[in-house]
Image (cartoon, rainbow, N blue to C red; front, side, top):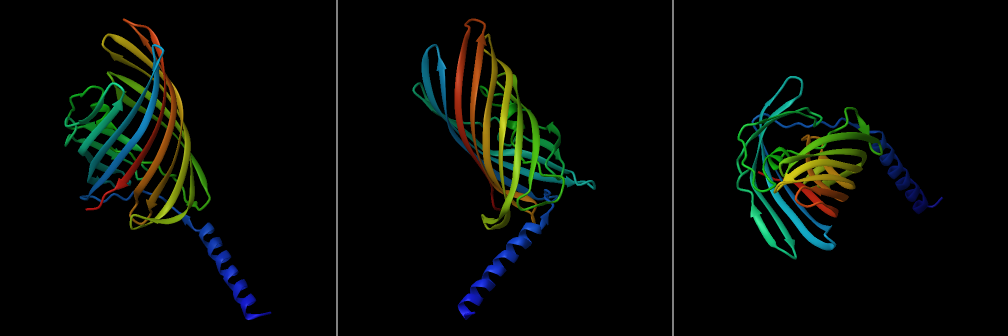
Length: 280
């Protein structure tokens, strides 16, 4: 056997052994926010929506850019985390045939919400410290959604392992509420460096179902819809933090309007959201 052949076989064995070792390595994923520390995340969303109203099609581009500050007040003996969240900056934009506008949501800047969260990311309670005056359809709902964390599996996982989660959330909008059910499947796909961190790479897919009732100008609006999401999350297991999360969503919804006018408005929306841990 030639030296070249022996070397080739040796390298192949090293690769197989390394792959096998990584496949057998297990990880317990937990959030490790530290008492007294401040964490900041920037979330940027951009997307498009097509809706049909009274026989006319309208196309719209929407976007948002929100930076959230999370100050950890306490870490409890059971692992629960107490933090106070507020927005450092918040801006939304909308562009269509009828308007092109950018709005700074000054009403939520610095307004605080206290959140108690488990080390796996389950939000146990929310307490509004500074109430927010609504601005159009934005206000309490935006404040409530400032802290967005992915729930982690309550077990050790290894590369290639799959786990599922079901989330039920309430979104305040236009004087009403939208109820969202998300069915998610996660896969630990491997290790990858991201933003200067040694991370675990987690891919996820899922389905969404929305139902809700809102009100505007004396009319009642009923919403129903379904959608799909897909994303990739980079989690630093040593720090116990998500450092980068990128998600795309596609939804098909129908809004039924009753009151002064009766109509049905079908809507299609695509959105991409990127959430990044900011440095000091």
